Amino acid sequence: MKTVFLSHSSEDKPMIWRIARSLESHSISAWVDEAEINVGDSLFQKIADAIESLDFVIAVISTSSVTSKWVQKELQLAMTKEILNQQVTVLPLVIDSCKIPFFISDRLNCFNSNIVR
Image (cartoon, rainbow, N blue to C red):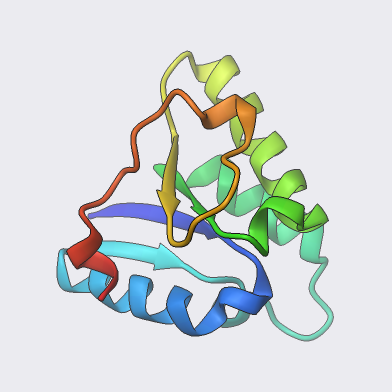
């Protein structure tokens, strides 16, 4: 089973849970922070470990996520992994109309819009 990290803004959480359920229904395991991080865990370490070990990072692009410092850090880690492994692992998923970050602007939206409904 493929596993994905959902990089997102906390403001998009209701949509993130819909995306996670939809992915699971397609036999793709979704890593969502609130389900995986426990009290006392190091947020940064848990996120870094997940990004390093999972198959893909889905960058959920929204007006909230493009300004989120956490999303920026997550995507920096994921893009470093891409460079080191020399393979694409960051997949954008645009969920609303906003300016797409430059470093992934050349990639197609990774999912048909039906997957997030």
